[in-house]
Amino acid sequence: MIVRSAEFVKSATRPDNYPPAEMPEVAFAGRSNVGKSSLINVLVNRRGLVRTSSTPGRTQLLNFFDINGTFSLVDLPGYGFAKVPLAVKKQWGPMIRTYLGGRPSLKAVVHLVDLRRVPNEEDLQLLDWLEEYEIPTIPVITKADKVPRSRRERQIKGILEATGLPRDAFTLFSAITREGRDEIWQRIEAALGL
Ligand code: GDP
View 1 (cartoon, helix red, strand yellow):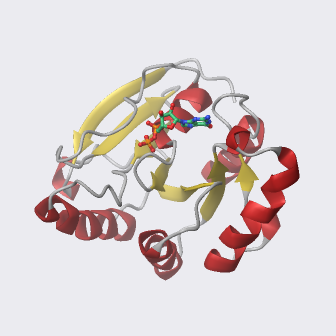
View 2: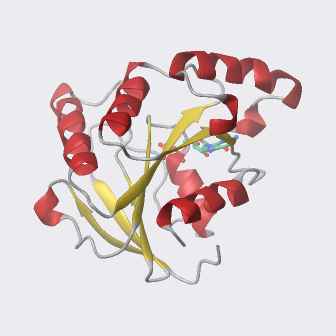
C-alpha cells in the first residue's frame, strides 16, 4: 500500500455523527495500551496521526481517518483501562455494538492483543460480537520486539488457547522493527477489495 494521504476526518460517538459510509472501511480495536495508535501510525507512515495513549477519563470516541481518498480507517476506543470512570466504561459496549452492527461500509476489524498478555474477558467479548455481526477479523499480536524469538511461540500458545483461533490467523507486529506491517496491509487490502 502506498499511502499518499492520511487525514483525520472526525470523531463521533453516535451513528448520526459518523461520516457518510461512502468508502470501504477497516476499524482497529484492542485494550488500552495494546499499541493500537502505534500500529495505525506505522501503517500510514505518519508519526503523530493518531495520538498515542489515552488519558483516563477522557471521552471515548470513534476516530475516522481518510486514506488516499479511497478508504477509511477507524480507531475505536480502547477498553479495559482500569482508571476510566464506570460511567465511561459503561458506554463502551453499546457504542461499539452500535458501530459494528450498523456500519455497512465496515469490511473488517483489526483486533490487537499484546504478545505478553493473555486475552481477557473484554477481548473475548469483542471477538464474540465480531462473529455475531459476521465481520471479518484480522487478529494481530503486538509488541513482538518485547519477547525474544525463542520465547514467542510459548507466549502465543496462551493467546491461541484463550481465543480458540489458529496460529496462522495471527500476524505478529512490532511498531519498533515494523515486522508484520506488509502482511497487515495485505490483509487490509484484501478485506477492502483493493
Ligand atoms: P494504544 O493505547 O493502544 O493506542 O497504545 P499506544 O500505541 O499508545 O502504545 C502504548 C505504549 O506501548 C506506548 O508507550 C508505545 O510506545 C508502546 N508500544 C506500542 N507498540 C509497541 C511495540 O510494538 N513495541 C514496543 N516495544 N512498544 C510499543
